[in-house]
Image (cartoon, rainbow, N blue to C red; front, top):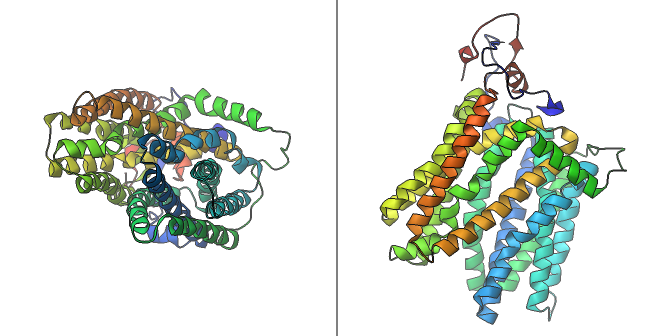
Length: 448
C-alpha cells in the first residue's frame, strides 16, 4: 500500500481478480528468523525492552521504599507512558530523516549513558526520575525506526509473521520483565537492576550496529523538512486518509480490551486474592495473545486476516462484557486470555497500515499511531481506576468491553465498506499474482 495506491473507499465489491493456480508456499517463522538482520533486530528488542521494564520496576520500588508516597510512586511509574506522547509526536520523524540504523544505535547509546548516570553516587530521587523520563522520551524514535526497518528487511508475506513475533515478544517481556524486576530488587537492590538496564542498551546497540545493514535515510536529501512540518505532514497523511484513519482506530481499541490489566489489583482484591492473584490475571491476559497471535498468523492467509479483522476486533472487546456476572478467579483468567487471543487482529491492521504508508513517512506515521495508543491506554487505566472506586472492578471491565465493542462495530463496518479484502489493489499488495484478464472470485484463492 506504499505510494497510496491501495484499495480506496468505495471500491466496488463486484470487482473480481484471479489468483495464480500455483501460489507460492506460505512463509514460516523459520523463514523469518532465517534473516540475520531480523534476528539481530529481535534480539536487540528483547534486550532493550526487558531492560526498560527492569529499570522501571526497580526505580518505582526504590521510590516507594524511600518515600512511602503512592503519588510519587505513580509519577515514577508514569515515566513508562507520559514521555512517549512527546517522543512519538516530535522525535519519531528522525526515523525518516536519518538512517534508521543510526537512529536506533544513537538512541541506545544515549539511553545507556543516561541510565549509567543514575548509578552515580549521591544522585537524588528526583534526578533519577527525570533521567528515566528522558530515557522513555527516546523510546518512540527507536520503536519507529525498528518497525520501519523490519519492513525493509523482510518481504510482504513475511512481514505479518514478524509482527506476530514482535507482538508476542512484547507481551512476554512485559510479564517477565516485571517479575524479574521485582526479584532482582528483592535480592540485590535497585542499583544492580539499573546497571543491568544500562548493559542491555549497550548490547542492543552492538547488535544493531554489526547485525543490521546500513541503509540510506528514506528522506535522503530532504533536509529542509523541520520536525513540526514533518509532524503536520504525518497528521495529514494518517488522519486524512479514511483507510489509515480506520486502521489507527482499530489499533487504539487496545485501550479498551486491556483495561483488565490496569485494574488487576483491585479486581483480584474483590475476589479475595492478593498480589499473586493479580499477577495471574496479568499473566493470563498477556499469554492469551502471546500464544494465539503467532499460531493464527501462521495458519490464516493474508486475505482471511483482513476479512476477519473487524469481527475479531469486536470480539476482543465484547467478550469482556461477560465480566458483569462477577466471575471467579479461574474463569476471569480464561475470559481475559480469550479476549486478548482475539487481539491477534492487530497483526492484520499493522500490516495493512505499514503497506499503505509511503516508506519516507513510515517513522512519523508509526510514531503518531503508537503515541495515541500509549496515551489512550494511560487515560483508560486512569478512568478505570477511578471508576473502580465507585463500582465493582468487574463492572468496570464489562463497561469498558461494551464501549469498546460499540466503537469496534463502527470501525469494522467502515472497513468492510471500503472492501479492501476483495479489491484488486489489496490482493496485489499482499504479494498475490493477480490478473484482471480472468474473472474468478477472490475467495477461490488457495489458503484463504
